[in-house]
Image (tube, rainbow, N blue to C red; front, side, top):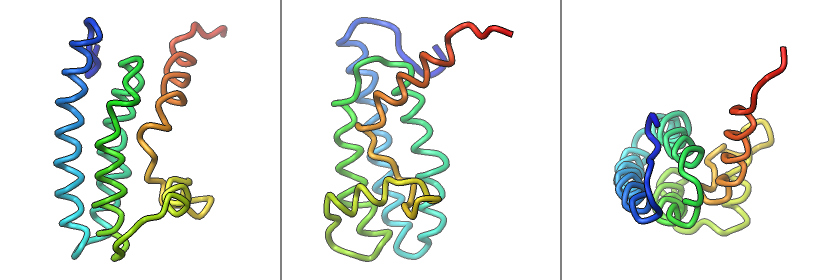
Length: 130
């Protein structure tokens, strides 16, 4: 279904693993770009890449643990490059995940969003009474 995967758990894992590898490579490239063009790298991750993995999380059930490499790339490579620092503490990572209107950066924690994305997807699939 439009970017999701139909099949057994092993097929889903292989599909997600390929997508995660692509996104990790992209995040690493954006980290390099962030040195000289932080706004462009930030916009690319929040307006494009993040939306891609959220869509997959909505369409492939039970894939949360498979997104760990994405979070590692964001926390260990992208954010330090973007913010010109060497380490991102768990507390700061939580703050950076907050929406901009609450003082964060809106760079979501990929694994923690899974339940919310599946709930959101199920809610929108329900018939609407008009």
